[in-house]
Image (cartoon, rainbow, N blue to C red; front, side, top):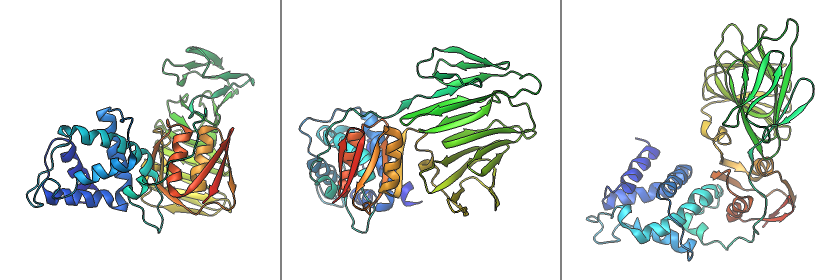
Length: 404
């Protein structure tokens, strides 16, 4: 059994009224404090907080919260170490008040504390000085996009009513009751190919179903151009930004995604392509099925769990055992980092909150790991990042990053 599996097992017993002995509690403490388990711990605590739906006490102290939680997991806290059974979580009312608050810090805060040579424990992080980040009116992104029809007319999808939006060469363009965009199958006139383009702004995301039934999730600041009916021998679309695809299987009509000077060929599969202009590489990550990457100088085929990266110099390389959960975090409405540099985090923040980041001096040499919900306010996200000795100043829609 792996460390993560053991942690999951002990944690499940602990929160489901199954007492643990002192040895098991000691093991649980060690697993919780293990750097390799930071991400899992953050997720477990966040799930617990959502399950309990408790209100954080107004007199909450982060330092007291961590001390309380940690002490309750201390062997011998209630008696001789080898005989102690830790009281199940549901019967510790006062403990839970602190734990609910600790969850916010741990799952939203300590979940993104820095990975560095300078080790920091949850308790140490909780003792950091309060943040100076003011509350702002900047809100997280939402479902919004524009649809550009073949004749150049533009439809603001967020404001459009449900139902028929347009007819494009025999294909009906429909906004569904759940807010998504869909195409009711049709056949374009002979020799006529009509194209639509869906575009998400900064602070926007959207989901659509293509004419062939393929599903596409669009990340912020992205666009997808596609025909309103796939009548030829291939299904061809063009992407900028980032999107996740679940392609309808049709071996007789391969699906192609053109991105910059690359082409991703699929038969029926699930994959993500990230191709922002301000990122150092185009990344194609395969979740299920098979894709072939065609670049001007190379051709490679991926298997599930692999990621192909092509940097700006044209170098193409493949990475195995990629963290799929991290790659698809945006699709599942959270940020997830795994030893990532601050500038990479800030580029995601810029796109989702529609802000700009500038740096006072050099970019702070920090690495971060963990999760934050994309529904969090900008102020909350920056407060979490400040736990790693980085300061921010927010003026309008500009964030100045200050290296302490």
